Image (cartoon, helix red, strand yellow):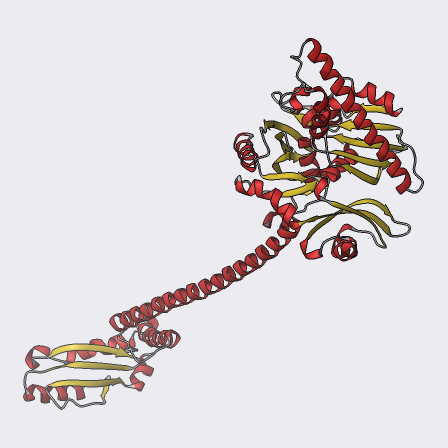
Amino acid sequence: MIQDIFVPSKIGSYYIFHKRVVGFEITSSAVQASLIYFSKNKVVLENSMSIALQDQNPTSIINAIKKIATTIGAYDEVVTSLTSSAVIFKELTLPFIGRQKIAMIVNYEVEPLLPFSLDEAVIDFLIVEENKEKSQTTILVAATRKTDLQAYTNYFEKAGVQLTNVTLDMFALYDFYRNTMYVTQAYTSILLVDFGVDAIRILYIQKGILKSVRLVPYGLTSMMSKVDETFQLLPNKSVEDLFDKDVDGNDEETKHQIVQQLIVDFCKQISLSISFFQKQIKNFEFPSRVICLGAGSQLQGFLDQATEICQINFENLDIKRVAMRNNIQTNKKTKIDPQQSASLIIPLSAAHYGHINFLSYEQQKMASSLLNKQLLTALCISLAAIAGLYFYSNFQVKGWNISYEKSRKELITTLKDQMDIEVKAVKRVTDIVGAAQSKLQQTKKVCISYSRSNNSFLNHLQALCSKIDRASLGLDLKKLSLHDKEIVLQGKVKDYDALQTFEEELMDLTDFILKDRPQELTFTVTLQVKEDQDNNEG
């Protein structure tokens, strides 16, 4: 779903993403299936299977579907076709072009023509002709009851197989013809006939355009049973008995008579269909040939006898030749059985050529629901991402704040220990750095006095040391601080007599002025360098 929203699975007939599709055909005598692989421009028939049915018991059909699904090979999609006997056909001409536009209004256009309510119906349509000059589209609408469709899809549901597409047998046949066999202007008109086991499907095609269809609601099985009531040859009255070559003597002659009668009955339906089309279709043209497929077309002598009776050229659809001409490849171990051609045509039409899908009404609801879930999920993911980003950002900021505070405290401790700066009350690091820079500038001024050009201050300090008799005073100098033009002494002397002597010695210094006299044994005094001394020495 997401894949198709952002990138289409195919463009035209080119597959961007490969896929495998299983096509099922269910008849009264067998369940048949073909596995087709689509990749880029390549179409490959990878496998085909057929399981005969002993009866029409739903359990037998379900078991056959289940067995095929589990043994035919890996697949991505499952498609099948609904029989036309459960469908009503209506032709409409609409005053615009485009499948999407038609799909929006076709239900309401066909509603008055239905023998049941629109709520009970499942509707799809085939575009048979577009007139761009008049902006008109002719479509063939197919409508079936939801209950009939559900009864058919229940076989697959109970077999545990998820259906992707349910097309229509006649539409699938026309799609196949139109995309693989039709040659522009090659034939004026033809009949395309599927002489099947359960029904005879007859399509009248004129210059490649499907003009009309007719369904004979009984096929080879019913016709054979009716004919065999006279001959009593086929004990099981099964289709396989008609193709059994192990019949000898009189039985062979009797079977030949049955086949002859089946062909005659078939030709009667062809003649009736031509008469029906002739009355129904304006500008009707008699078909130049009849292309046949299905089990009935494989009866012995079918083509020659049908051509002779109907006076029309009959030919069988050479499914192998058509497949080869359209680059439909087959695995070496897989053979195309003409009697199973429908199981090949169905997946080609449903997945490759056509647009018919009677499950689209359910899939649209599912797609809408899925889209809502996707949007809700995307919203939840977006909110979760925003919330996660918010909490992660807060976590990062908190970590940065912790690191900042730790660094600030380390800076304060370092400045206290190394530079004797008290900045605990300062909150901002820039202010702390400013205080350190001020202290540094002050210290630089002191250090400048150590240079040769400014060595007078050191001379004063030397004079101070020579004048003070530390031993006699019992002087314990705790700290000596050098400032710009000042010396600060912190310490103590042994007694007050020594304190008096220390004060006198300081006052006798010729290079300094005593700013603070010592009053206690533990003292702090400031000596200022005399300006005139500095000037004379400088």
